[in-house]
Image (cartoon, rainbow, N blue to C red; front, side, top):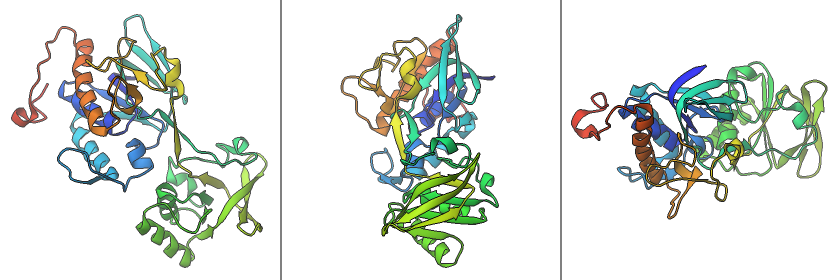
Length: 335
């Protein structure tokens, strides 16, 4: 079982900054996220999108902001459980929590901080017969370990950044690779789209535009897909793995079952410290709600700071917490 002071549910920008604020107060953090990498929406959906309202940055790309946050929290050595959905939270008699993911990972924490953005992200699934039948048997909705596809026949569907980025990466991993997109133009970064086109022209992958997967074939494991073009013509293609990357849909998910006060699919909090109605559980960032709430990253950063000082009273009940300034003592001198 993983032991930590604070378990942060959600490794987006607000969850990451919470590690920094907790670290200043000598609290250890473990982050859990259903996505296979940190960054939340900023990494998964729009890593190249410029953000203009982060103090000190007239403009910063979403992906770069996440990299900077990772660098900022590195001195505090947070630990991670990525690519797993947290499903159960049990409050024990001593006031601590036991958390369990759908894959069976168990975490013991004194404080739980929900920083899940808009909730747990679930993949948008194409409406295909037998799709559920082949999940984890040839159908994957995210790439957790690229080596899984080495020497395999892979088909990716989608036209956004995630589909393009993985197509470029897996071109050198898969034995055969195809990218299917229902339009002629991609939604992702133009530079990456051009790389995909160049790889297709070089014969390193097949590109099917104005096309979509029409059916899945196989017995115990996916073995082939049918691809239908705009004219209605179909072609059968052998494949080991089909990866539809159509973005993510935010859902409150298991959080709704934790006994929290939910208001319009958000978690109600006390603005003095962003605590919930369950002692020891906090909610920061877009997942929470209160009068005057603004869904801005910088507001989530503010919430993380107040949360950390409140959480420190639970973790160190006999220790007086005083605010110290990093400009005076530096990061290592705080706590």
